Image (cartoon, rainbow, N blue to C red; front, side):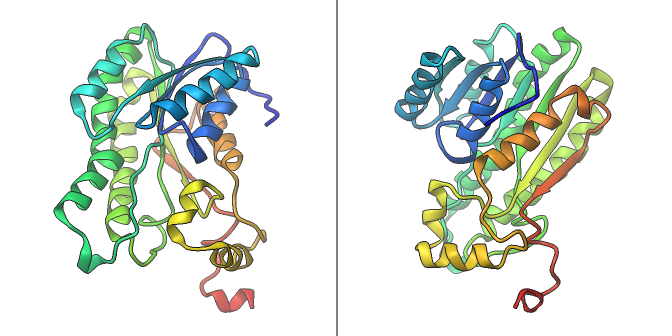
Length: 256
């Protein structure tokens, strides 16, 4: 991914950065000169990505973490001498009908997608304050804030909460020089798409998108690079929808 952004000298933490959208974000910031910390439950995958980037002369480190563990989050941030950009991208969304959602599924969905955002933010604040500012970015979703998908009511609720957090946190943290923004992806081509069905389903979804394709992780990464940059220095409390126009039609009949 070619980039015109310069993050040289900056430290960027990306949760859930080992694959999919997270990997795209990690690669984009690393290619832009940042030192990137990849925090992921799958340490082996995170380390493999870090090794791949370091072999190219970029700077990346891997850390294994379960984002449902508040103490682990505190320990992760305490390890950092500085932090310029925090991207909470990790997500949990097992496709489950409403009637079959268990307390364990709901609790882990909220813990990873929403609760971790609070604990990451709290742990990052001393670093941001010491530096005189920083950027807090979140991978939200169109599912919940904009549209619905069968079997994802728990995920939709967590992402609607994420958008509420973005607005409120942006207001509270503005005096500290901390900007808070998010990206709402639509259907992005990632390994997680396997949760939603086979290739025929993916083809039907792509055909229903006005731009005619599924999104790529790099599409989300580009929005993240912009939001964390000086080009977006007067933007806070906002989300950018990156969905190929999928949420624009009032009905799919307009695409027939």
